[in-house]
Length: 143
Image (tube, rainbow, N blue to C red):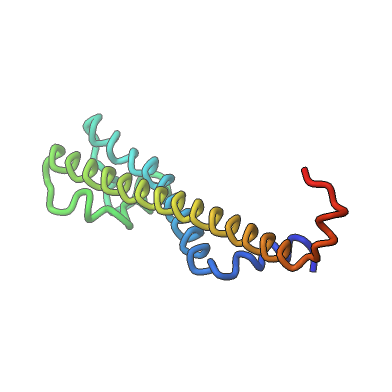
């Protein structure tokens, strides 16, 4: 087993935390892109158009996908452009909050993994140094 394999073995105790880190990073990245896509209905409503294209068609593929996923949240029951704009802003802010919380969780878990792996390496090194004979330290220069 090479050096990389031995280093990966140090991650084994933190597998659950590592998987949670990967999931949080992935979801935060997806939500980061989603916030840009959510700007489409915001800008459409701001400039006096419908927040999303009509159900019959029209609009780009991204707009149709957006209408299918968050359409009821954006225009559900709100006939006025002001209510649609409020809904768009609430969904946008909610998405940003969730994305930032997940980014924070990913950063904290990443630091926890890094620090714990470094601690484990130091403990293993110290344990190894304690098993060496005293003769090793007499003939080996420090520094």
